[in-house]
Image (cartoon, rainbow over all chains, first blue to last red; front, side):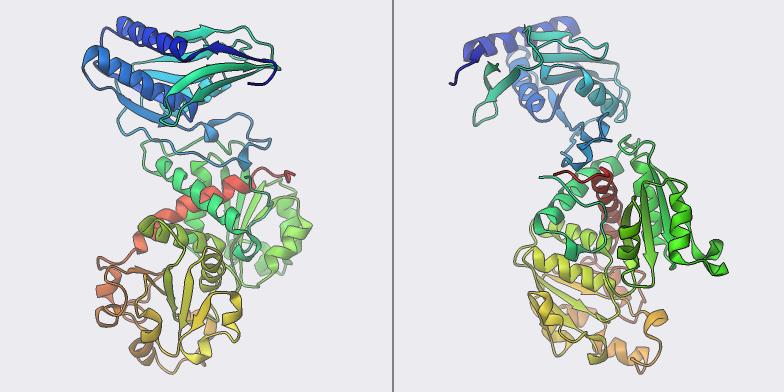
Length: 178
Length: 310
């Protein structure tokens, strides 16, 4: 590990944070009925799948997981964004009448979340959308806040937050690079 | 990697990686076409002009739907309603359109090279929807996407293209694209309709007859006999053409067991394609049309960055 890199959450810390979020989701929504998770590609999808496993362990019922790619909903398309490849959006269930937990790894400006919510709305009308993130690093540019947060981390805009995943795409630890 | 072209005029101008990027984007665009709200806000505020100097239903509608699904504003101009009939030159028409600040012009024109001519002179993006007997890149891309859907790859496929290759921009775009992606193209058609030097385009084999081309093929692509283009001099009768170069259930057996049958449309039923084959299980014609919208969305998306990124 190079100079200027700190571990914000180690493997056990990440596991505990996600377990706590899973419990909070169940408490707030009174179980998993009508509950679905939608992860934002790509980090958010891995976190969503991890959360789904934990929810199933606790409740004994599977929870559906969808994936949303926000490239086509970005607000900086006039710049260079249209040179980006478009990822796959895969929501193989209806959102109509569902309680949707939108999941991302890091919450920063809030622009990604805005784009993801617009994308979800185009797939149907959920009863409620709640936001779960592993890290909230501040610097919001839109009026958006998370319902479930693994860890609040005060950062400067120059710093980089990196959530690391293992070969099975399960979150391992979270690093902050100065 | 990113897409660095202002225009898409010919698949000859694109690298293998760029073609792959367009196909991947198109594949992911398909999700939009299958949901209730078939629209994303990506090209909101962009203006796209469909300038069609030649008749077209499929391609023009497909480009128009693609533009609208990306939230761009699309305007159609066809020759019968344009000043071209009053003698205005192509450049004058284009400059007048340019004064209305479009972001992309999608054009079909009978003269090969007219797109390069405009692309050099106009700041907006130019997309080729067919230029003479040169190229039809969106058709080439949608054909490749349809093949990739089926086989999961393009590398190593044996693709037979049968018919009037000389006058076919569909064939040229497919040959350019497929050979770059590692497929092997076999051409067959009346000798008057096979361009000289076709082998120089890459991994291309010119066959002496249709059976040789479709023998063991993964894909049999039939070209439309373009009665409006080649006049009547190259072809004795349609009946004779159909006997030697038409695809029917009998000769289709020469191809691989589940070979794909493709056709760019509109089909001359009973000429290049018998109705049994056109409507049969092996026909992928409707999938081609379906993929057309997604491919054109990908093309509009990737040229719309405007400036080149270094």
